[in-house]
Amino acid sequence: MRTITSILNAHVITNQEQLTKALRQQGIEVTQATLSRDLHDLCAEKKVLPDGTVKYVIPANPVVEKKVLGMDSEIAKLSIRSIDFCGQFAVVKTRPGYANAVAYDIDDRGSAYILGTIAGDDTILVIPRETTTKEELYDFLYDID
Image (cartoon, rainbow, N blue to C red; front, side):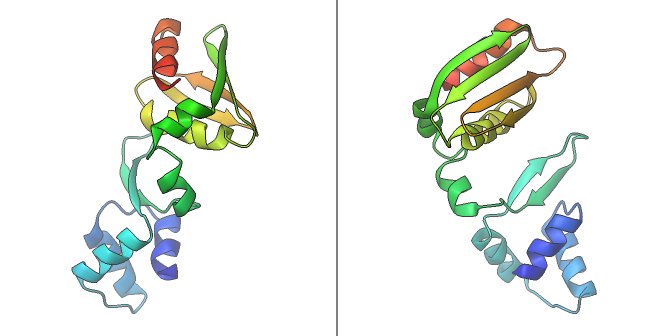
């Protein structure tokens, strides 16, 4: 599984066929069923890159990301303490230690509205896309809260 993680971190792999080929190049033969199971065990997900390409990724901490980040939005809702705006930007205050999880949830759900987030321990700077209005950002964030 380390080899799979290594390949996925180093290359843009968009499907299991490409991953099988990359494993073969390293001398590893694997069946599609085994590869599917390994990807599942690694909590591999497909993510959209800024250029629109979809690739497999392995979460940095699969246990946390599956149980906290994006999988249970109730945790995000309970973690947000306040949302304030400075121009088009939003500043989200969370419970201490929850900013990264909430930022992940915002990034994961907000691709149409959100360019990205920067998270500290209990504060998140939300950077909207240029086409996102303050009202759209407000509605999106308050739907989470």
